[in-house]
Length: 439
Image 1: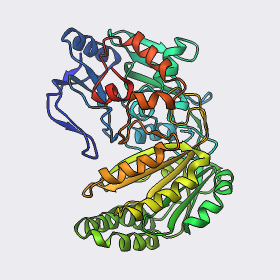
Image 2 (image 1 turned 180 degrees about the vertical axis):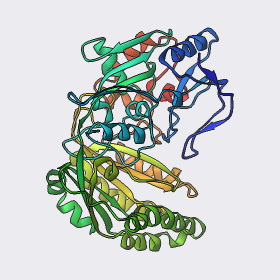
Image 3 (image 1 turned 90 degrees about the vertical axis):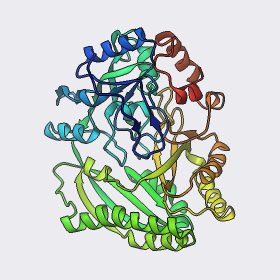
């Protein structure tokens, strides 16, 4: 069943969730993974797979058997001609990008962190930005799953299509993913243009900014009218690389966005009244820059400052009003918010539990430094997002339950029907899944 690695306490990256599993196993093959699930069933224990622990929600909290996916991190097959790449489910994204680089391939789109495992990224609905692009789960073409009875099954849009439709963004509720086949694209470069702009200017020109750039996003600094906009546009690999120099990279990615930002947040935590002034300073320090590099080196950045995060997917047309209401609420309720609000975009898709299912989407992510209280601020933000039928990110903090969520997803009950079929005993359930999917 894989090597047992003890029963030590576990916590996620942000420290928002903890677990004390009955036992932890680290399978090194699909067969060992299947044996671990079968053994858990024999002992009457629930099973949860754990990757990098980058989810802020309790989606990966294990009560019974915790499956450490770190032993399932190998390449299975690469076909440069078709772009189909199969890897074991525990491979982290940063290693996957190295594999793809070696074969002249790339992920079509990415978020801004590459520490997650591929199975964790697809199972929670991880996404990047771009009005013509969709989240990680959209790139999945085949899954190899271990079901609750210990059987190993393959599913695609043609083979067990209902299971595939549910499992490519399955919240870990249907089985444990052993292997993932992704549709990748030829490698490409991104030209990044980052510059400060006023919030009013961004909102006034939002439609053009989103339509005219492959990957547009922006950060708004609460207590100010300042934003940092990011325009990333795609070029062929023949385009010369103009990557930031070592000093420039250290200043922007290492010092400004991590060391200096950590120091600023520590000051704000000790002297809360300084937060608005610190935000105004941050809006000035994050200055304009341009560079071109291979796609994943532009998409993803190192993140060492610990924070809490809640993110909602909103109907695209609701975004300007929501941001203005959010701005007014922060001042009215006198919240002190030291982290910028991140805004991204995605095309509609047809994945059952995707937050972008059936509608063009704008994502609004609110954050709070881990030493600041986040609960009241997040609650007030959620009220604004809920008023426009927002859908919370499955891997981030939120308070909604199945009774609220069922009305926000057209195929929610179809997902539950597949779950009833493949896991009637709720072998893969935990308290979070009981809340968001029901028991």
